[in-house]
Image (cartoon, rainbow, N blue to C red; front, side, top):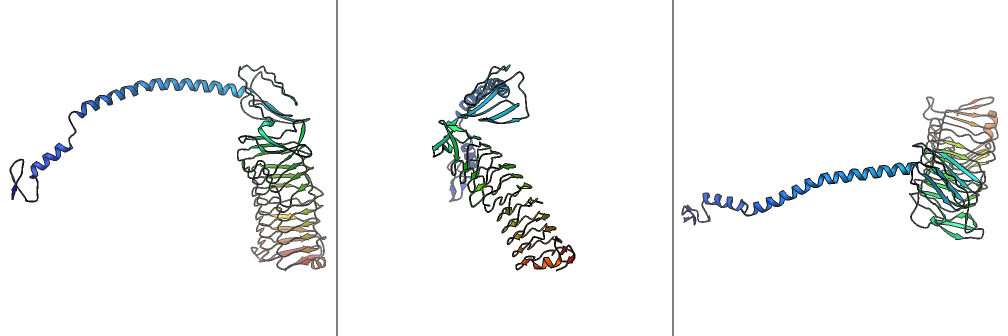
Length: 423
C-alpha cells in the first residue's frame, strides 16, 4: 500500500491518487481558464452588436435594388425591339405583334402578354429604320447580323458553317452575305446546339447539309421556306418542333432520312421525293397526324417505323407500294386503307397489335413475308376483288402469322366481293 501525494490517504500500489483527489483534479482540468472568458465575451458582444446594426442597412439596400429591377423590367416589356440580319428584319413590340421579313416575304405573329400603349415601329430590308412614340424612355435593340454566323464562299454564293461565337436561341439565315446569296447550310453546322429554339431558313438556301441541326433537342419552331430543294441525312433528327411543314420544292433527300426521332406531332408533306429515303420518320413516337402529297408512289422502307402514337393514315391513291417495315411497331395503328397499293413489303405492318381493319384493293399483286405478322387484334380484311382473285395473289411465308390470335374465334375473316374466306 502507498499514500496519496495530496491527502496522504492510503491507495493501491497501481493508483496515483485517491478517488476523492482524482475527482477534484478532473474538475480543475475541465474548467476553462479564468482569463479566457472575459476577453471572449467582449469579442462576441461586439460582433453581435455589429451584426444587428447591419441588418436594417441590408434590408434598405435590397428594397432599392428591387425597385430599380422592377422599373427596368417594365421598360423592357414595353420597349420596341428590332432584330436585323442583312436582309432579314424581325420587328415587334413587347407582348405585341412581330414580323419576320426576308427579302419580299414576311411572316407575322402575335404573342400574349402586356401591350405597349402608344408604341410604333417600322423596319425595312437593306437597312433598319425605326420610329417610336413609346411613353417609356428606354429602348432595347437586338441586332442579329451576319457576324453571328460563320461563312464559306462556294460556287453559287455562301455556305453557313455555324455560329461565329456563343450559340444563340434563334438562327435566322440571311438571304445574302457580302452581296452574294446564302445558298447552303453546311454539314453539322449547328449539330447538338441545345440552345437553339427557333430556326428560319429562307428560300434562297437550296441545300441543308448532313446533320445540320441534328440533336438540337430544344428546336421547337422550324420554318423551311419554299425554294429549299435538298436536305441531307439526319439534318433535323431529334428536334422538338410539334408541327413540321415540308415545302413542295423539297424533293431531294439523301439515302437516310433527316427527320428521325423527332418530337413532332403533325407532319404536312407537300413535296414528292425524287427518291424515297429509308426511315423517313423513324421513331417519331409522338407523331399523330400525317398529310402525304398526291403523286407520292411509295411508302418508303421503315418510313413510320416505331411511330407509336399513329392511329390512322390516309394513303394517297397514287401510292402503289408499301415497302419493308413501313409501319412496323406502330402498335396504336387501328385501321388502314391500302387503296391502289399493289405490293406490300416484308414486315410492312409487323407488330401492329391494335390493327383491327385493313382494306385491300383488287389491284394487289404481292404480299411479302410477315406483312401482318403479330397483328393479334386484326379481325377483318376487306378485299375489293373476288375470292378467286384473292387466291391468285402471291403470298409469302408467315404473311399472316398470329393474325387475329386475340379474337374470340382465334382468327380473322377475309371479306371478298362474292363472299367470305375464313383461313
